[in-house]
Figure 1: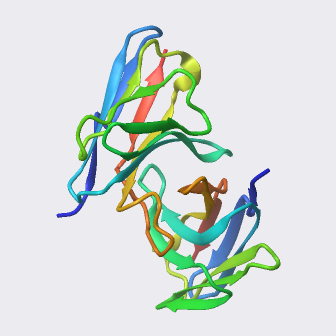
Figure 2 (figure 1 turned 180 degrees about the vertical axis):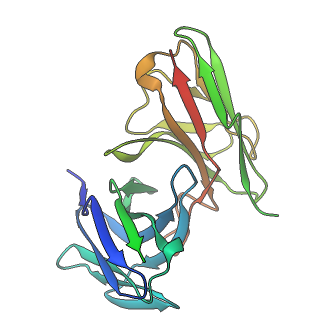
Figure 3 (figure 1 turned 45 degrees about the vertical axis):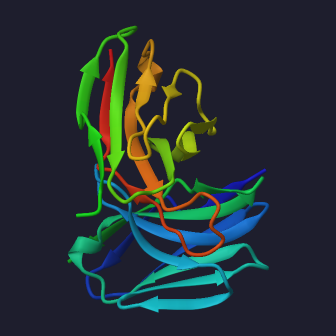
Amino acid sequence: GQNIDQPTEMTATEGAIVQINCTYQTSGFNGLFWYQQHAGEAPTFLSYNVLDGLEEKGRFSSFLSRSKGYSYLLLKELQMKDSASYLCAVRSLSGGYNKLIFGAGTRLAVHP
Amino acid sequence: EAQVTQNPRYLITVTGKKLTVTCSQNMNHEYMSWYRQDPGLGLRQIYYSMNVEVTDKGDVPEGYKVSRKEKRNFPLILESPSPNQTSLYFCASSSSGRAISYNEQFFGPGTRLTVL
């Protein structure tokens, strides 16, 4: 079957660095996305990895290891506005169609 | 402005009263999808559409219907809503459902539905 695991909740301090892990089991792997979602709002795209390695985008970086079924999202210089849920989503290609499978999300609370 | 719109944003209804949640995108996207989001379960796909007149079931289609008569619109229909359909619903679109390259999904603002 297809499965995505990520921690339910994390807390961190303003200005610090936090790493949110995601492990997955899926067939037809065709990329991994990270989305940010503030409470009651729509998910917004943060990053995309399809090859192994690190993708950096300002304060946010995302890493992928396909052989380990593992990804992480790294947030640096945390700000209060980074308090949100972070969704790991795996794209799976099956029957010529790309399906996006979401983890339950990690709720990050940033404290002063 | 490129966007996905949903209406209504909030709806309280009663069991059995048919309702439709509209979704529209202005990006000429081929692929559209409906998700529901419940605490602890993440986003689960209800139905998706690869293009006009092409729709298929996602992971949790029971109790829902969809149609795709035009490229821009993808309404979600609840013929006889029940309390277990109380949830936060998101419509999403992307340029293609078949792309093998980077192809993010854009999400609408969400519809919070309560069925009493």
